[in-house]
Amino acid sequence: APGNVNLLLLGWYGTGKSLFIRDIHEKFPSVYVEGANSTPVGILEQIRQKIQETGSTRIFLLIDELDKMIIQSDDPDKKFKNQNALSNVIDVGARLNKTKFDIQDTGTMSYDIELKGFKTIATANSLKNISPLLLQRFGNYIEFKPYTKAEFYRIAVRLLVTRYNKSQDLASKIAKYLTESSPDTNIREVDKLGEIIHTEEELEAYKRITGMI
Image (cartoon, rainbow, N blue to C red; front, side, top):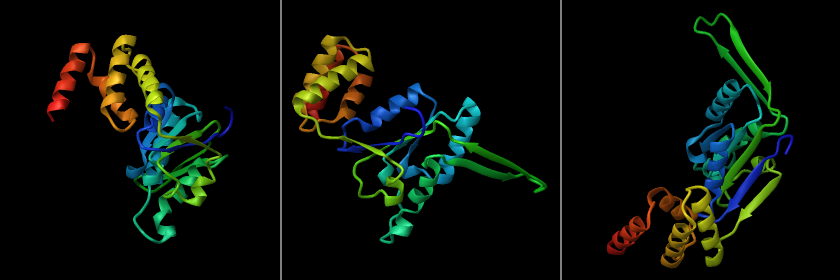
């Protein structure tokens, strides 16, 4: 979509939100950060570097677990300090400003870039730990709800075939094993087995090992 379109992927753990933005990061010019380990200053610098690298402001800012970008405090001003600063970065029509002094402090180098086409996609488990100011920057929420077993099986098969190039038969057997053996419908487990299981023999060995643990 044209313009600044910001999306918040909201919902249950293990529904594939992180996998979704990881795929975007692999396929499109983007900056990927984890909320718990990021600061607005660090994110700004990564954006600036990506703009210089691509020569375009049409990039994605991808923030995984945005609700973990908090400071432990009962004071909302302190708790949401970083999130409120981040809201200025992803605001519609935001401008990236940076002034850098040289070593001799004899001059400055300035960056003033209008972020046209800049889009933010973030994930969160809930709205509880997201500041009201930052929430205003997301015009759209997409809620990921827990899957039924039947939905999980279909998603697992498709993920294994399209992302990991498994045969339909092997993908079906891995998906069936996960659906029947786990009480939870966790897409992370599909992702994990997609990386390590390549044959039916490996799947059977994995079943034996996990059965002994």
